Image (cartoon, rainbow, N blue to C red; front, side, top):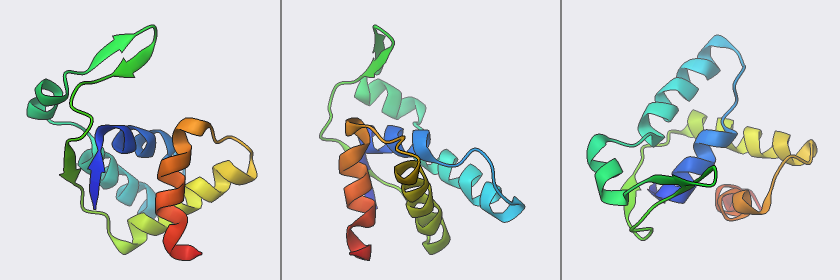
Length: 103
């Protein structure tokens, strides 16, 4: 799935921090796939401004492999945050994108 820097950062933020052994292994692999390489750091020109991450080249997308189980974990994490009313507007486009196939 092609993802831009903002989508990758949102997904890294919403992935579960706890779970069973299998889930945590998949989350660990997904975190590695969503993380940024040295080259991507240079390309995006990441910087912190007032505690927020900013970057250049927002149009650049990278193919991130997301398997069926990883997709289930992402969707479950979104639904859990939704049920707890812990989502914010920055998450909305990513949430809609990952839940659109379920509607």
